[in-house]
Image 1 (tube, helix red, strand yellow):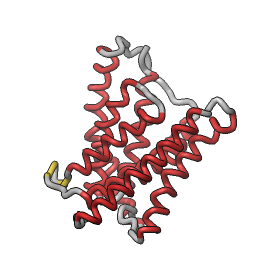
Image 2 (tube, rainbow, N blue to C red):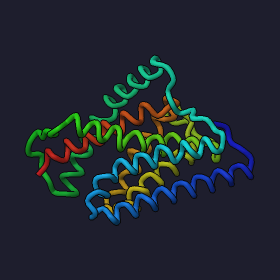
Image 3 (tube, helix red, strand yellow):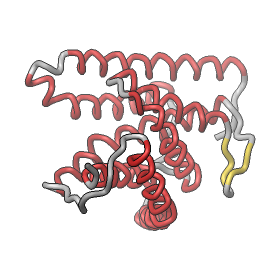
Image 4 (cartoon, rainbow, N blue to C red):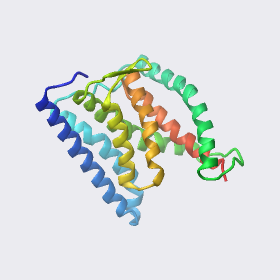
Length: 227
């Protein structure tokens, strides 16, 4: 995306701020009332719909297209190949680092090879209700809009990136803390940088969606291996 004039940049900043704050406030309110059974059960679906249709409605209203979606099976195949390639490159060293994190920070030891009961249900949950809406909003809508506001000044591993990439990852991490606080949420910033890089590397959000879902599943399995 190319940058825009000062007036348009201000308008885009307000757009991002208002929509993001609105979605996070609604999500936070839902979590505050999660003790109510039917709200607790409906939260994942409601939040997924909000983070998908919020930007869709905004882009339709502003008459901007969604240039972050793959079109045609060849492009989807390419995105899947990129997902496999980057998974092979990134996940092994990540697991080594995560092992020492579990050992030094939590004082836990590897005790077993865990399994994930109802694997396909868990996979579908993380793909459909977590990875797709989060990547659609943050890497698709938010990061694309940020690159219109701020120029991409650096070339990192063959990809042009800028402060919009960093700000998107930061907001992504902060959003998790606003909804449900956990002290380790700061670490979400780092995989978010990878998701953002993959979005720019491939030009679409298919690869970050798959990588995001795979990372969530991998961590769920990994944590279960320790005691």
